[in-house]
Length: 212
Image (cartoon, rainbow, N blue to C red):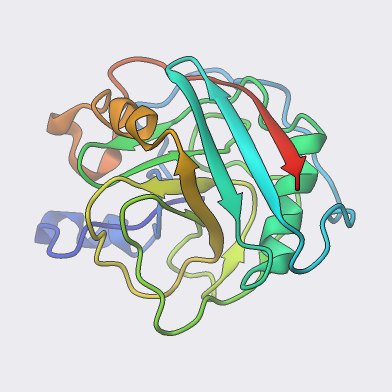
């Protein structure tokens, strides 16, 4: 499972871009050598959120807390899948395995390699006018997967505008704690480019789903 490439990336990254769409490189370079937790697999997500239901994901990390207002209207299947995994404890102990300063921070891989997932996928293409602006949260996919396909990996945009095509399923937006996301973004190695090698390990302690 990979992540988006910054528009205008060097030609040397072209081959890697063919395999990645938003988050981390498939070769696992710069990621933890051991899984953050045992990789639990599911056949499909259970229904835990209804379309249009107001819900927030409270993400507690080693760098502080931020909250994601889930977009259950535009992306009911994507939001439900994320909430299901969160309530199963799937994200507990996982890391931000790809951190690209000034672009995105990505997490949600139980293996910490950029290739892991929950054992199933969800398809929910975003609207064609979707823009990935600062604070937007979307789901990662590989370049060969169709628009809107997702597993468990998600990314937060920390750039003013990531300049990405509408390929990534929308999850929501950071409603509280964007400075925490920006702080995490500073912990990526600038020299690693799009690989986004973390300089320090940033761990997700838990994700709590709050319904309103």
